[in-house]
Amino acid sequence: MKINKYHIIITIILLIGLLFLNQFISSYYELERKKIDDTLSKTHSDAMIRARAGIEVYAALVSSLKSYTKNSTSFPSEVELQTYLNDLLDEIHFDSSIIINYIDTTHVFKYVITPEEIDPLGIKGVSVKDFVDNERLDELNKLMLSEDISLFTPINLREGWVGFPFNFSARDNNNNTLGYFTPIINAKYLLDYFYEGSNSEEFVHKFIVKDSIDLTREAYFDGSPIYNVDKDFEYYKNFNVNEEDYIYSDINVFNLKLKVGSSYKHKPSLNNTIGFLAYLWYFIIFFLVIIIYNQFSKNERLNKNLKIANEEISIQNVELEKNLSKIQTLIKEIHHRVKNNMQMISGILTLQQDESNDAKVKTALEQSKNRINSMALVHEKLYGSSSLKDISTKEYLEQLINFVERTVKSDELTLNKTINIDSNLIFDGDTTSNLGLIINELVTNSYKYAFKEDVVNSLNISILKDPDFYVLVYSDSGPGLPENYDFNSSKSLGVQLIVILTEQLQGKIEYSNDNLSTFKIYFNPLQPSFKE
Image 1: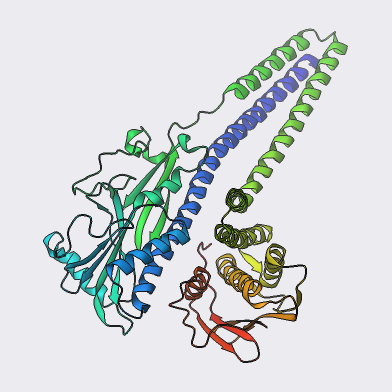
Image 2: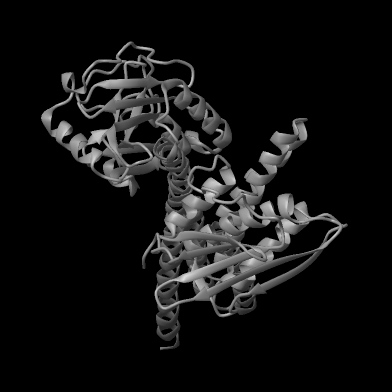
């Protein structure tokens, strides 16, 4: 009876051990699969974030062209528009291909402009009706009556690249409709964002327009002629990737939906070594127990072996706890990656400053660094918040202003600074980012143009809440702007940014210069980009 009793006990222990071993191995492989999936998800997410930055460049470029043509004193000529285009491209550091077409109300080409040439293909005087269908003509007729910017499906250009055709109504400063503009921007500029980074060789991306038509950096496969002899060797059909291995996200570029998928080119396989060693360990223990059972008389040796086995299990548990801590750290690191990427960009701009002797270039790079740091600070605050989506506005703006002061303030400058913001005022990340960029531009301009070293200067910032909107009031003791200053026609990039960001906040700008130079910006918080 005693032998049967121990036999049952040993059998139960071995079965329980097998169950725990299976659970351990299953958990390990699930963790490995999750690491593989998380790496893909992070790569896809990082690429989408970079692509949205590229879309912001598109938006700024097209919006600036629209604002310039509409608000110029007289409707610009070809040469004037080309000059403005080159100045604009220099300011935003946009070095990709672009063609701007101005087409009159009868759909006849009036201007065809690139940064280098005017009418390079000799199509001035040609009618759009010769190569588009009636459905597209109807869309263009409606566009001339609209204030919106529209993006039509990509096209393969005879110049040998695939372009995004943006379209907006051409109007003079009296709001008379003169036709429409069609800036066509190289799609490769946006798609290249997905191939940046050290791990680009490991992943493949696919780009789908209208849920069915493939787009690459060199061609758009919609059945139209392709003039580009270059091939995109990263085209997803060049790789044998199963459809279920892709993860997808949508990007809306001026209401044109671009579906983006990402996958491993060769999905990593799971390492079976741990499982093999674990089962080997189990069967070793199994046979040890059998041997110990058959040699029951050698009880002391059995106890020693069991103690060794327990110590090994304890060591493995410690290693598992260390691995778990590493995994938790990696997951937390994902939340900080966006901020770190922006700081890296800021560092690169600092290196660029050191390489340049041009004061204007240094100033422009410094301003770009400040703008990037204002956005990076948003992400730092986001990932430090419990909700990961809301930010204390007062704390954020105080830190932002302190940063700008450290960058541009002179030790000889005397400044009385007042910040009147409710400490409980909370905005989401998108709204805070826009406000931060606006404040960055205003504070930077105050230090550059308003403050003097031989007087006591003042700076006042407040955010007030009305029933239907918020009001940002910014004032300084400087001489202010000229009388009848027109924000919309300003060629200053900083002023253009303030106007664009205010429009994004569905707001408006008021300016007065009684005792203090005062900006009032009425705005509403943005709708969240990502909803729960």
